[in-house]
Image (cartoon, rainbow, N blue to C red; front, side, top):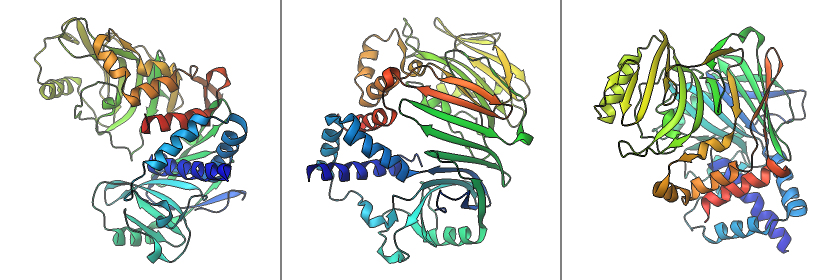
Length: 420
């Protein structure tokens, strides 16, 4: 009986995590081709094979790993659940069906919603605690803070959706990118025992050269689809001040990240050690961006040539061409190269939590649950590997140290950010 309770608690938790962390029916995955109903303005589609994932996790945790820490934390979460917390049983959805995230254009806005199979066609049994509605045998959950008329959206989906056919690939996560209604790229994520494998395949007619930074440190380069709106990507870097950069029309980002540095003087709180290459959709002048940056940060540090001086630190900037600019806290000039793949990632993930000259500030940050858990998880990974397999396909591998189980480490990480 106790073992049965453990299975039930684990199952509920895993699905709750997938749904509400936003990681996000189609026909059965056993078909030769996958039939996916999508709005004709879809920009990005993500499909998570939740049933397949759950079977692997439950079997592994109960009969292979048998880690008591996991069940103790699950029990603590269950005991701390409040009466007014959302009851998943009231949502009228089948969490054993594939979980889908759809990002599309709707009334000039970019809209995201979660989609699952409905347990019943009777919409009256579904508790409307969040914006959700049914279309046929599927339930949609709108992932937006803006006010949206559910009736209008439902009607729009019925009128503007069509069937998209995709090859059936038995992987945990399947992603498709679209542009102007046409598929341009597919990605498949396989979570193996001690590594994550990502395969990215472009349409051959989409192959072109991209100018990026030569990889160093922790490197990421990606092309931004038309559906992505960037308010402040740099705000995701630890301790970087939140600034409303005029970066809404960026089409490509290339970054080398080396950690976060606390200066020895008190001129500024800290600075990310970073090289950043930004390519815009329209011509953009670096001078105007620097002036806007100074205005928002309300500083009056001197500008000399292509650098801003603040104490012993420097912010270097360079106009590469009419649409591309380079920013760096380390190197006056960008070391550039080219690639034929719009998504490129490589290097040591541990640099994301690296701090220099931290002192008492670092001691305070180290005890924050999210930072502490993230640092612990990243220490268990090896450097990301990148392989080009064909002209239009490449593979990214994130290996774990000491043959650690990927699913187990991810679940422990999520739990540690919720319970401490």
